[in-house]
Each structure stands twice: as C-alpha cells, then as structure tokens.
Image (cartoon, rainbow, N blue to C red; front, side):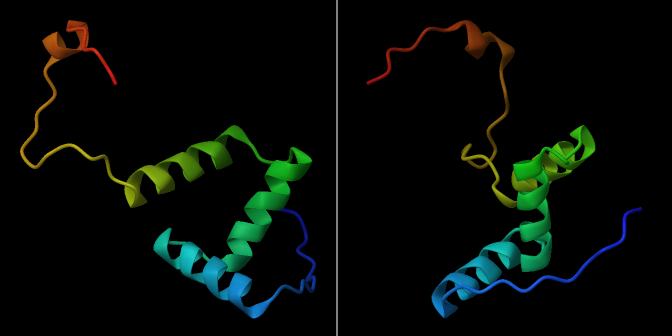
Amino acid sequence: MSNKVNITLSADAETIQSARQYASAHGTTLNQLVRDFMGRLTGASTATDAAREFASVAQSHPGCSADGYRFDRDEIHVRRDED
C-alpha cells in the first residue's frame, strides 16, 4: 500500500457542498471521489477500481423497469421502432 499524503484544495462553497451531497448519495466521501478522479486522470486506476465504481453506480442508480417487470428473452428479438 502506498503512503498517503495530505493535500489542500480550494473551491467555492457551493461546489464543495454539491460534491459532498453527490458523494453521500453514492455511498462514498468527497476524499474518495477526489482520489478516484486523480487515479483515473493519471491512469493509476485498476480494473478492480473500475469494477468497484461500476458496482457502486449500479447499486445507487437502479434501472427504470416497472415494478414486477421480469426480463423475457424473446423480447430482445422483437424490433421496435424508436422515435
């Protein structure tokens, strides 16, 4: 495990508050969001990190299927005209 170093960032209060709310809604912290972003920015993120992020987003943003909907394999073969 690498050594962690504290850094200081500055941003306007509204941005910080919005970011904290976003982090909370996604079951994480502002610190973790910044660490994740820097990891992606520098290419330091791993496949495990990406999988963890995917799982987090999938759990916090459920699909929009109607209650009681069950997937029907035959439906994937039906062509529908989309507007």
